[in-house]
Length: 125
Image (tube, rainbow, N blue to C red):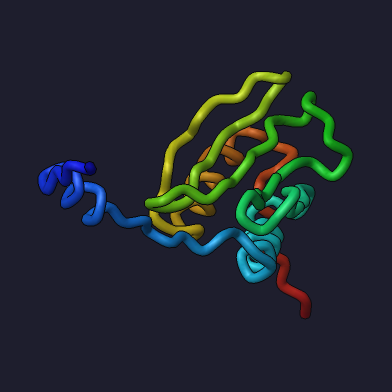
């Protein structure tokens, strides 16, 4: 004979899962374009075993830590998580609502590295 426990049953039934769109090719294209404007010497790569676990890596073209840190962007329930990777140490920068916010933070962080400064505007006559 089974005994039904309505209080416990109700709590389980009310649980739900929020669907989060994984990082994809559109996000990669956006980040590539943004990084061309901020730091053209950096490349953006999409990594992951499957779409649900995809993340982007922003790193120097040659991957040299001496030039500065790399950054890892992953998808969280409430936005995009940005981590800084430098000399095998990973530090969380924060979780941001949009990729635009991530790009703004990257611009500030990369400004201290002269090799990655945004190129001066060039006017051709």
